[in-house]
Amino acid sequence: MQDYGVRLFVGRVFNHDYLWFSATEISKRSETTPVLHNYALTYALGDFSYWQGPPTPRYESDLDQIRLYALPSASDSATRTRLTYNAVNSRTLRTDDKPGNVNAPDLGQRTYLDPVLDTQPGKGFTVYVYTFDGANPKSLFRLGKKGAALRARWTEVDQPRAVMRDAPVEPTHPVNPLDVSGEILTYEPVMMPPHLLLRRTQIRDDWFVFAELDRTRHRIHVPRRVLARLESA
Image (cartoon, rainbow, N blue to C red):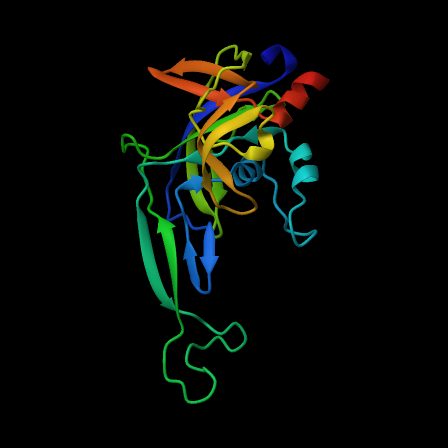
């Protein structure tokens, strides 16, 4: 893959602050789950942000401009903190101006992922990133609605080789179903905007990179977007 200008990195990512994003949001209750969507990771690592422009992302055209592509990630070790607050009226900036004679607080809840340190063994997220411009992924970036600071420690996969497997393979990471070229046999859905991800997925007739780093075996799916880069190189 390196001969075609594609490099592959395996990183351990730690949120150094409380991480908040709405994986699900019902009424005034927002839940953050320990799963990172690959579109959010790609935008964050690629320094792509809408300060000015259309009100909603245009994923297909945006992702074509970013010189890397991340895969989804999940953490089984993350802990969460739930905060309850009085919702503020966005027009009056008050919490006590409910209509009529109703005398009750307008409560809301947010669930955050707790901060983790680099020194905590087994903590954080394992993130896989393909790069297309020869550069290393950033070691510091921000993610989530409040821009929580994240630190990443990357290791490059030496001479990654994409292999077609017709037998079922379970990747060591969640999968974006839009990235799959082969056949999905089994999966566990994870509902998250802009669309669901799949965990514990078995895929056949698709491309994978197999690597062993620090005594850990990695089964890394090769997304359609990366295959298109290889074919056009």
